[in-house]
Image (cartoon, rainbow, N blue to C red; front, side, top):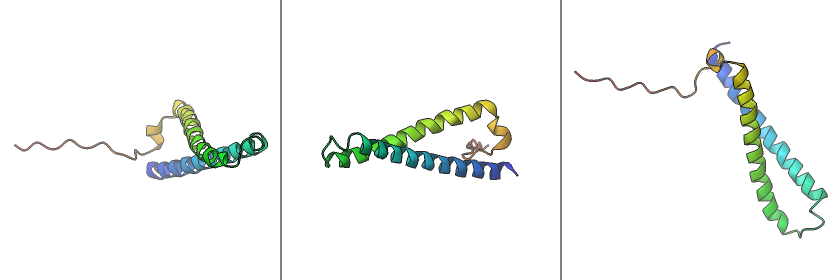
Length: 96
């Protein structure tokens, strides 16, 4: 496998992981709400809590992703296995 293919697999795997964590966190928050606060709060509160749970699950997945990525970065050297997605610009050539 070459570096570009490794990069593609890493990006796809990280995306799937991030989406899965977001969905799982969202489902857990709604389940927790249904067992605890659903009996106390009015039904109209669920509309706002739905939005809060959605944003909260995105935030949780972002922090979990960053934490896991930092652990991976500490163990392996990315430059040896992955190709940069955004390559640095070449400086413009000077005309004589």
